[in-house]
Structures are given as structure tokens and as C-alpha cells.
Length: 359
Image (cartoon, rainbow, N blue to C red):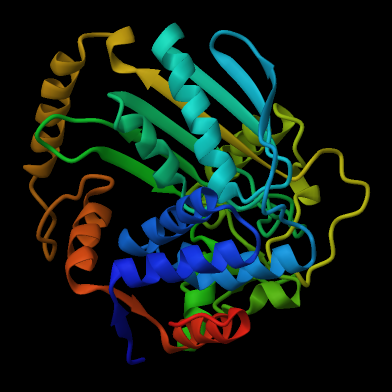
């Protein structure tokens, strides 16, 4: 499909304007837009402006509070629980990470669990906030149930991503940002837009059989945990997804398992929810709480350089450090623009007409 490229600043201004139109104050609107666009910059197109209309639809059915009163409802010197008041996760999660960072400044580490939030974009944005303060950042969130645990036909977990971001010195930060499924749901959405098949190991049908149909979830199928099947370690992906669900929701008082609210606004809310909204878990670890930061970053550089120097297998140019392709993509897209699939471009034009904006 032919893709047009758009300058980052153009998309940032437009996205900010859309968030303002649904009632966000200018500061929150710009923050939400930056978090969303960070996904496009880093090449994670499934979580960028392609989801903008999804947030608008959630607001239209009153599942998103555009002006939340985000507050700490419980805390200790190194921990906190935050109620996001139904706000955009794009705004709630950065608030929570700032709290984690401040606690880490005082206590060495800071850990914040969040209830009553919504989809927070890419985990990497939030974890990298800590890196800017010479800290290791952690970010995870649960999500609506699209994933079948190993040996299950029921969808009980979300894609439940985990990100750990680690500062270095001369080298770019180490950023492991990943879903705990073989592939994120957004990857299926991209395949649907391109009319392409899914690789084996991504999804199963409603009976638990392997499938390559990217529309399988619409027929009762499920995403698969990281590994795909038991023989390839899906029980490990299942366990990782469960850890995210517990830390993000059981710990905070958010909804968990099959009761997590869906992102598509047309999907009915689960009945008898045990908690409030979607849950996140954010953490910040001050490097100098363990060893001098400069010393650590010197050795982090050495770690990265040694792994970069590893001999690649035949047919591959190099060994890749987690976060390296995304950093390279960010540099390239800031220079050449962000490519949008035609269906995404049309979606944004529809929003422009809806809110009387220029695109």
C-alpha cells in the first residue's frame, strides 16, 4: 500500500487539537499527543495515531474522563497507589511515573500501582521518563482480555506489555519494550489493513486450533502467549502476562483478567467488575542507590558494545540491542516524516471534519 509521510510536528499539532476538542486542557492534550506520537516515531505504528479515533470513541461513550482528578490514594515512602479517575492512560501513566521518580529520589526506588485508568500507549514512553533522571524505568499495564492462557480456549489476559529501560553513557539506553504475547493485537490490526495473513503461533481459533487468520479474534479466537504453544514456551509468556495483570491490577484495585474494560468502544463492558478501570504499574530505580551512576553507565556501555560485537549468524548483519531499532527509527522519522497507511490517513481526515480542524 502507498503510504504518505507526515511531519511529526504536523501530527503533534493535529493530535493535540483533537484531544482539546474532547475536553482535555492544553497541557494534558499536548502530553497525550506526545505519548501517542512516540509510538509512531519509534516504529510501533499499531499504538500511535492509528488509535486516536479509538480514544475519541471511548470519550463519546463516557468511558474516558477528559479532565480527571488524578490522585494518590495510598502511599509509603517508596510506594503509592494512584486513582486515575477514568482519565486517559496517556496522561495518568506519566503522572504515576513522576510520583515513582520523586519517591526514588528520596528512597532509592519508587513503585506505583494505578487503578481507574485507560490505555496508556506504549510502555516505552513511561519507562524512558526514568532514564532521563539516571534511573532504571519499569512500566507495565494490563489490557482487555484477548489472550488465551496455555491450554485454554477462553480469553483471560491482555497483551500485558512490560518495558524496562536502562540508561547508558555514550550508548543509547537499553529499552526492552514488549507484549507478553507472541504479537500485540495492534500487529493483527496492521495485517488486517494490509489484507495479509498472520504467522503461525500468533492466534488460535475458538476451539484452540492454530490459525493464520488475522480476523480470528472477531470469531471468538484468541491471541497466544509469548511462545505460541507449550512446546515453544507459551507457559512462560502466560506467566509473564499474569505477573503484569497482578502487579497492575490486583495490587492497585483495578480490573483484572476477563473483567478488564475493552478498548473498542462498541464492545460491551464486562459485568460485575471487581475493580476500577485498567491498571498500570510503574517503577523507578535510582542507579546511585546501587553504585555510582557514572560507573554503572561506563559498564553499561561496555555491556552494549560487547553484545554489538557478537558474531552474527549467516544472513544477518548484526546482533541488535533492545531499543536500538526503535531509536534508529525515531531519528529517521523525525527527519523524513511518519508514514501513515491510507486507512489511517482517512481516519484522521474524518476526525478533522468531525471537529472542524485542518489536517
